[in-house]
Length: 169
Ligand SMILES: [Cu+2]
Image 1 (cartoon, rainbow, N blue to C red):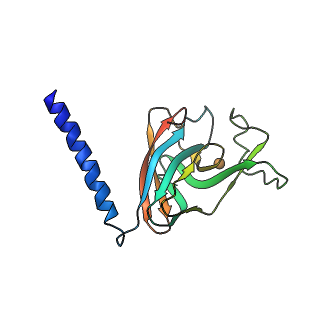
Image 2 (cartoon, protein in one colour):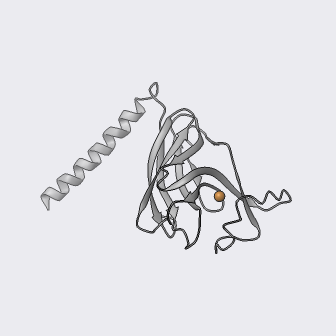
Image 3 (cartoon, rainbow, N blue to C red):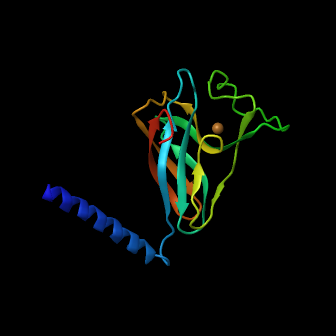
């Protein structure tokens, strides 16, 4: 019991230490923190999947793309889901028509970058921005995880382990 309390205390100290460290880091390297990453379990037969996360940039930054190991999928694109208007791009729905999550009112399109304002978290979530994982080598299975490499304009490449889940964490 006493040991458990001590261990917990140690974790709290470590957390405080890293917090003050990053506060002293203003003139140093830019950093982007990823929180709550997840990818949705892909339905049987689906050839693409979607991943979501929250990005917090200590300095201003931008997400300019992402990549993935070929053993997982062919490519990753930044997408945004919008209410269908009259632009009718018809992008990317050829293989997704069997998906239960497709609705007639929604469409999605690739975006070049997502701006990450200084100190203001940006969330990629269902119904908005997401990372489209194209041409899956195998289905995204619940309980597994995939590794995505995020490309950031200032911070450079950032590798993120993304757990596969049925729903948002
Ligand atoms: Cu998409």
